[in-house]
Image 1 (cartoon, rainbow, N blue to C red):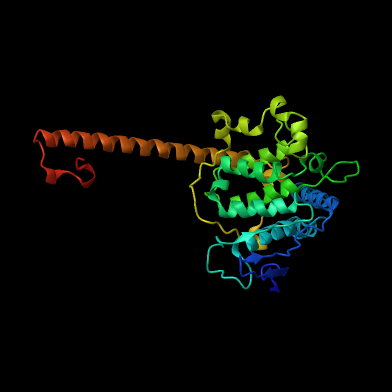
Image 2: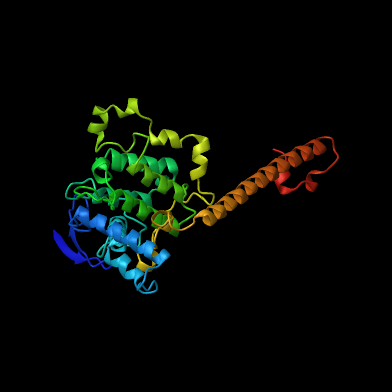
Length: 341
């Protein structure tokens, strides 16, 4: 039995297929499968150009009115909204389902795209990021990229061989992985304490997909990487990031593990320009970095103080046990935390 309904979040058609042997949900959500690759690059070009004009100004350009149309008309915000909507539909169900639950733990979901290694990977990765708190750690996020994107067959060599500003004709180049990182950053800035990594970590991944001394993002799939013997001829980016002195730079000092499902807002006003990436060459980011460094110092100092408090409490408990043993104090005089074991 099947029925069609319209998702209230974005107005797209959703086809629901019911089976009494297992609850099958078929999502006919055509998010961006029909958008040509060159149009994605045009969207990125328009975004960066508009951001540059906003900062530097241009004759006849009203920055209070003209920037938002540049951003919206070139589809970047629209793409982000559609990605989030598709991911949340998979996580939460849609109209006609029991949405009183945080998510549908008993449901199996099949996500199908035209080729299966572009938009499909974006949506499935976002779903895991929302549901699984382990994917919000550095190791978990690296495993997510490795599993969904690298082993999933995303053609990094084809998609990232040229930028949106390349003067030659572009064919299969497209900022698909960049748009995924943008989605991750949008969730990160809405839940800044739920991610172990910071903004610089996401910028680093973007940089290495386009130009890298490591072999992680080379070639288009596992077959090509094995044929090129990248595992023996190059070093993995994940190995580099595992070094403690390197990893420290990409840790979020505000991280507080959150095992719950996180629900990002998909309201247009909730999505903001990722200035730390798109405007990093035209806006001084030093003040923001200094602020994060100060936060990191405060957190480290807080950890030191907590460690000292714990050590002093243990010493106090040990001394009180000794005093109790020689009869210097009575059991009734001991604090609740200092009763001997």
